[in-house]
Amino acid sequence: MILFGYILKEFFKVFFIILFSMTSIFWIGDFFANMGIFLKSDATFIVIVKYFLFKTPIAFYYIIPFAVLASSMYFFGKLNANYEMIAFRTLKVDKLVFYRILSGIGVIFYLLLLINNEILIPKSFYMSKVLKNVYFKKRSNFAVYEADKIWYKKGNYIFKIDFANFDRGFMRGITLFRFNNNFDLIERIDAFIGIYSKNKWTLKEVEINVFNKDMSVKREFKEKYDLPVQIDRDDFVAISTESKYLTLNQTLNIVKSLKATSIDTVKYKTELINKIVYPFICVVFLFFGFILNLRNPRERGGVASIIYSVVLGFVILFLQNFFINLGYAKIIPFFAAPLITFIIAFFIFIFLNKKISY
Image (cartoon, rainbow, N blue to C red):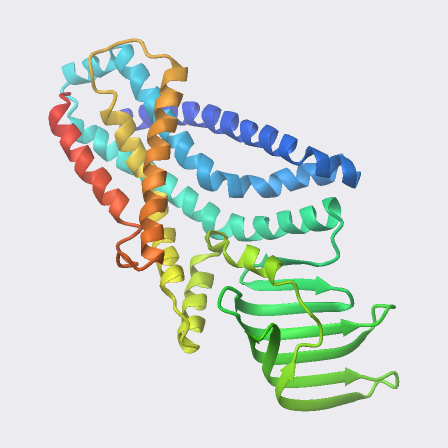
C-alpha cells in the first residue's frame, strides 16, 4: 500500500507536467492555425479563450493516452536510472506487485478518459462548432451536433434533426421552422423521415402547421412533401462522420435507427465497440512504459523518453485505426476490429516480460 501511494503520487506529478506541456503545444498550434480567422473576426479575448476551453476535451481524446505513455516511460526510466528498481528487488518486491499497481492506475485513467469521452466531448464539440461558425467565420448557414441532434440554419429556416446518415441520404425526426424577417414563427413542418433522391429531399409522413397573423393555425397532413429549401449536404456529411464525438448511448440509438430502416450499421457498431475498448489504451501504455525500462540502469533524458513515447504511441494508434478501417470495410468482423491491436500488444508484452529480467 505504501509503494502504491508512492508510485501514484510521483507518477501523477510527472503526468500533470507532461499533460500541461502537451496541452500547451496543442493550444499554441491551434492558435496559429486559426490566427487568420481570429483576426478577421475581431473576436474578443474572452471568446477566444472559451473556444480553446471547449476544444481542450476534444484534444484530451488524443493527448491523455500520449501523456500516460510519456509519463510511464519517463517515470520508470528515472526509477531505473536512479537504481530504485534495484532497491525494490533487494526488498523482494515482486514484478507482479508493480503490475497490480499499474492496473490500479490504469483503471483511474480508463475512467477519466471514459468520462471525458462520454460527458465532456459531446457538449464541448457542439459549443466549439458554434463559436467557430458564428463568432469567427460569421456564417449564417451551418450545421452542428447538440448531443445526438443536429441543428441547421439557412436563411429564414431552422432545422432540427434527430438522426441523419447523409452518406446514405437518410434523416429521421425532422422539424423545420420557418420565420419571417421579424423572426416571427410562421410555419412548422414535422416529418418522420427524409430521403435524398434525384438531387432533392423528400419528406414522408408530414404534418404542416401554418401560423396566421390572427393567431389561428392551419394544419395539414401529407404522405409526401418536397423539402421547401435546398440544404447544403456538405455541412451535414462533414459532421455526420464525427462519430467519436457521440456518447455510447447516442451511438447505440443510431444503430437501432439504422436497423429499423435497413441501412448498414457496421461502421457505428465498430465505433460502439471502440468507444468501450479505446480507453484501455492507457493501461497498455502504462505496462509498456514499465517493461521497456527494466534494463540495466542508465541515464536517460526526458527528451529521449518523450521521443520513444511518441514513436510507440503513433505505431499503436496507427494499427488501431488501420484495423478499425478494415472493420468498416467488413474485411474483418466489426466486433474484432477494435480488439486486434490490444491482442497484438498483449502477446508482445508477454514476450517482453519473459525476455526482460527484473
